[in-house]
Length: 142
Image (cartoon, rainbow, N blue to C red):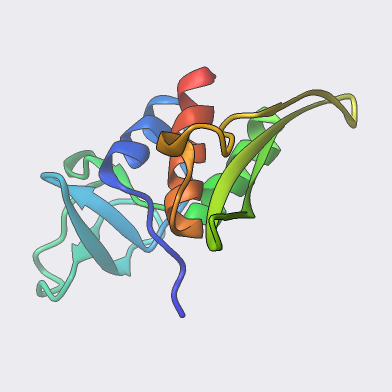
């Protein structure tokens, strides 16, 4: 099992909203690349299997590509927004629906069901698809 990396669109939204955490992946020219080497002062990175002397700078990267779970943690800790993908049964098939909570002063002040089972366009076949959609929805609302 591996953690799911966010899509390019979600990664760009995260960048726009101030996400700036170290990640093992990044997007360059809309293509997902893995960091193989990181120089601690931020002066150089190596993508995929490039030779170490072919470093790229932070400025050359379009954006970092975090996992879905790191993105959720950042939303929770930075913007006090949390959400889950909850399983439901739909005609005998398991589907996922996203619920969002906004936290203020350690109390839930807003609870809404972003997507409900009455709207087929908001039901997701996989947990990961539901989380990706929840991330986009939350980021667009910030």
